[in-house]
Length: 77
Image (cartoon, rainbow, N blue to C red; front, side):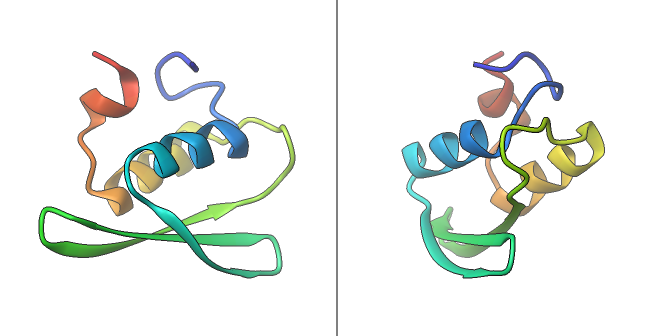
């Protein structure tokens, strides 16, 4: 699993989201939209597909906020 906010790629994010109850809702171009109900709230997370390139830390922070899953769970703290 990636360390910190660095070295996350699309495939690692997709695997983590699916493990936590998200499913692929739709795809528009290179943007994949995942949806789940977290804490009674429907959440939608947008993840851009760029192959195995790393996702930038600032973008990763945005994905974490969109998901509603704590940073500690994402980073395995």
